[in-house]
Image 1 (cartoon, one colour):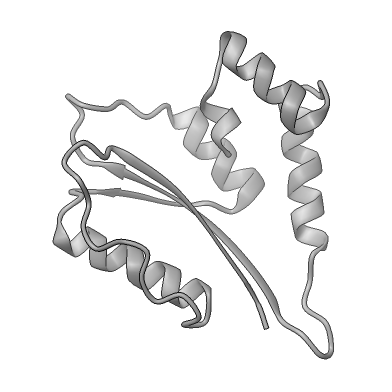
Image 2 (image 1 turned 90 degrees about the horizontal axis):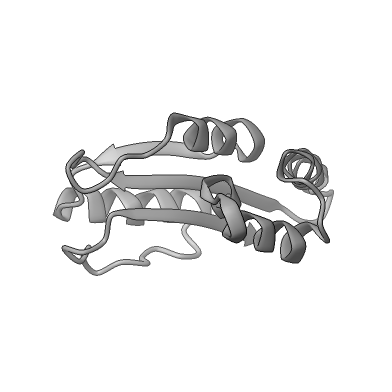
Length: 126
């Protein structure tokens, strides 16, 4: 997900490390397909969820629509533009709890003033 927001040398390095040099658009397709193939079975449950949370302050952060769209399309990322206040902290913790069937009920105590974006992945296996 992060690589979709990179460009230049950073993007090139991420393609090398994440996909052995595979171009990012191909890597997105591969990872989307792979993630979709990880299903629950008769005796187990596997759950994977992704989200992007970003601060609702345009003077501090401009998020490219293409970045959000690629992550929604390929990784099913839910997108949240929020105030990053106490209510957002609670909402993030609830999102994590919901997407791990309560196995993880809290990942944040508060959101620091300098935080502008969170990419959150929740995986549970039962």
